[in-house]
Image (spheres, rainbow, N blue to C red):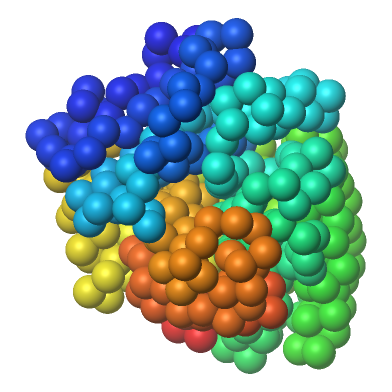
Length: 386
């Protein structure tokens, strides 16, 4: 996505008038002026995939980031510093991503990195950040992130998938599970944990496979699923790949025969699948637009007021970027500093409030309400809160 097409907040916020400016700049260092000597602004680099399978979340991620930055600036900024956002592309090879993070730290002199990209990108970024500046990873992931300087605030398999697996076993009498995921670190490690939870629930895994990111032909995979005859297919496919798989799943007539439990799945993906392909589809997440809580309803209202009711829905992946900046504001307030060491110390046990309500971070683990929802056309309906 060329820099010219990155939205400036005064073009994007649909009448929402922030009290301080937010900048949305280009994706390569050569497209941007080097940072001036003014240190009154807090420069946040937001890494978002602009293409490929996870690229479907870019609009809601960018909107959520801009909304959070404008709200924080209206309150006076972070420790009195106005937030300035740079959007960086999290698509491409590990070498390309490494070059971008090196540029953004040395050339742009950013103060904080935030991102809702894949775990593979997180691994590539953290190797080059090396604790030099704080790095807040916002979205659902496999857990266990303890790299110095990296703060992960998203859902993990233990708090997201474990209760959902047990609920499907208890309530839906599901015992036979088939696991399919994208071929990279998040599904690899998440499936290891999920197999334990399936065993705890008295179930068994009757099949598992990993699919290259970008796969668009699921015929052979669906043939193996049909032959295995599971009660539940656990889907850990990323972004647009999940859309293609779930459409094919329904077209093959499997939706009425098997349940599906999806991860990294939200309203954006559901819209892509369409209302005719969502029968017996469940998802567990820390955020849904349909959640009836004061915080979520207020967030959705502000989001729609800023970007319009036809804007990309702020599903869990995109919305997590809003959470990232809300966390940063509170952690900086508690620490009295934006340096990695005091921020990490403050984040070791902190409670902040965002669009999801109160979230507790303790020793690298985010504790939040988890909602198990069932697809209902192109929306969700919460069936259980954990």
